Every structure is written in structure tokens, then in C-alpha cells.
Length: 161
Image (cartoon, rainbow, N blue to C red; front, side, top):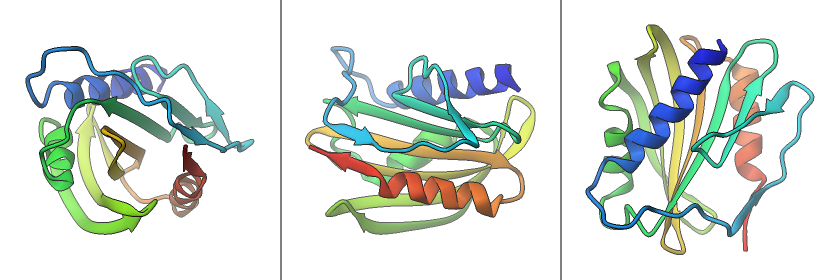
């Protein structure tokens, strides 16, 4: 499971950063905080991501990435689809544009095969202050309502300066 998590973190960061040709390397956002703690979730080394939490019993993963100075022109839905369309068996199950933190956000639920395992992905992306953010929950193929609730709770605890 640990190798799966490391592969997921690396793949998501590399996939998103390789969508559009660019000149300088993007920077990570420093203008946001997440006030999230749970005894059932452990914050781990994020590698190339901003933040990563792993559910202690099930191995489900929450990954947060930011890219400043990039991804400002494409629609949020296009960025979401480009992030995941290279995964085997990628299939969007539902999508929605919503308001979050006083700006437009795009949400999607999808199924994909990552490292040979079919998983469910809950995804929200967002732009603010010339930065692009993605918030991702990866669970087993069937939705775990408790993990989805934790993911929604984490999103409600994101604050921007």
C-alpha cells in the first residue's frame, strides 16, 4: 500500500505539471492553510505534493497540490480531465461546477485504475491569486461515506490569506 501511495503522489504531481508546456518551474502556494487533524488520518511526507494524509486503517489518501503561475487559461473542467485522462480505465461518474471560497470550483467523481487497482477519485480544483489548486480523495472502488465526510470536512477547513 505504501508504494501505491508514493506512486499516486508522484503521478498526480507530474501529470498536472506536464499538461501545458511552460518555461520556469511552477512554485507552490504559500497563501493557504489547512486546519485538519484526525486520529484516523496521518499526515505523511508529501514528496512533490503540498499535503498528503493517509487513512490509518484503509490506506485511503487525500492529496493536495498547488501550482502558482500556471494553469490560468484552461477551464477548470479541462484541467481536471487532463489530470486523470492518462489513467487506465478512467471514467468520470459525475461532475459539478460550484462556488467555493467565493470563487468558481470544479468537482468531479471518477473511477480509474492506478497501479493496477480500480479506485474512486473525488476531486475539487480551484484558482486563486494566480495559483491553481487540486484537492483529491482516493478510495477503494466503492465510496466510503466516512472518508468522503472527512474530505468534505478538510475542504471546509482550508483558509486563504
